[in-house]
Image (cartoon, rainbow, N blue to C red; front, side):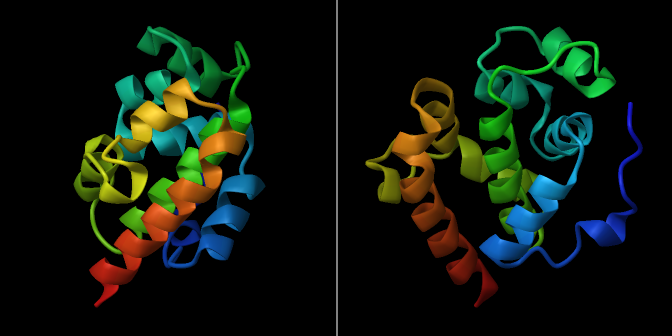
Length: 136
């Protein structure tokens, strides 16, 4: 497994641009490891389109590559935006909470069941709204 950057690399990812840059700069195994740390392996497996958390560990270890790497990078971007203002528990709650900006669907559900192209903009609107409210 590739080493994760020190914690200062993830501090202050308040804007979408900063979180995007951080999520894109990491090697894929580190993306999955960081996302797993923030959201849990079960959530990462769901977002990645698999049923077993064993696959998540294989992605982290570089034994296999996820088929939905772009979705995992985007999910990390969202998680970084939330967790930079609060805790990983809040990020987990946001990913599983019914969201009025998403027609009361959950972010995990959208990331798991729909193409990224179909949900990327609504998810960014929802997370930006959430982060803006949390920052005040």
